[in-house]
Length: 523
Image (cartoon, rainbow, N blue to C red; front, side):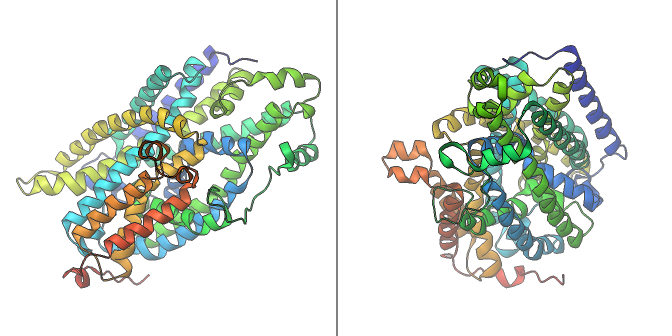
């Protein structure tokens, strides 16, 4: 079957979803927003369990809904190994970073660098975060636009992806602009319920559509094309091109998760919305454990899509038709199945789940917090005394400006991902390394040594970014660098970038304020 356009039932379900989110956003902000703390940190009143759900939603998003099935459709289950890196990263962030952030009453994570070095270092880190988050959230918006373009136009043509990206941008701005973080985390709860529920429905539907028994499916996956085991979980090889090997999990993927959970305002802002450091740490650990069944669910969906489209020997009488059905790009296989095989009504419910996973409001509110609190507010307060309402308005206007930056980046990502020919999951996670390599090097120096200065912080952030840039295919080809650089997986790129950034940052002489900047917390 070819993809079919939405019916009235499907559009009605989509409209109902918008209405539910609007009601949730209103209910979450009925107390009113009076201060910047209300807008950016939900007044530190967010329940621990809700923060855990919000972190889960933030970390996974469209990268999970489209990227994880794509990963197992193409390969195997080694992505599950990344959970080890997530757990190790969460333990380090919980014990080392979160207590320090609460001890100084941080609104953004980069305030710690002002105590350790000076305000220049804080702003340099904040700027690097903004650049990196535009890259990463722009890539996520691109993934989300793939799904919406398939719904609206039944293809992923460039002009249609632009329209889809803009629709998602308007959708994300609507809730972030009015309600701030409190509205965002409550909408995250609805979105997690919807996209996990939608995935369960797809799983059930696939099992019904595939005539083979579960033991037959497992046996077929264990003996995949060319004898490859598509159920392999652990890769113990030392392979620099494998992003999810065991060694990559305890090195590069652990660094990635430290960066994401502890140095990326997008995630850490939610952890700072808790009442205290202990609750923030618990929320982080709970989100990691909760991610395991969710990731497994989407991996199984990808495996079943492989059976449905690429194993006609298990599809009985309709094997020839099914084998010829999917002729598009692999990045659209999940959406192709939803739009061509799932009946109206149910199709609308599942598409709502995809759009829920695609929400970009989390990135907008975190970037707005950094732009206002680390840059605009110090500048404004040196010249005039403003009411808190002024900074709430500034935060809302910042979301619009930053949203347009994400929109532009999503368009760039369309060409970037096709040039690199990376799977969706590898592409999105790899983009995050641009900012994280420098930030990891700077914070390692700040927390564990007496070295560094504001000048070396700036140099380290730039150095880490440039190292990751040197691994990109278009840069390798343009500069005539060794072609092997293009094949090195993103966890190893992050290891190299972090090592270089740390070395650069430690070249700075000991700052006179470093002793004063140490924060000791009884945890």
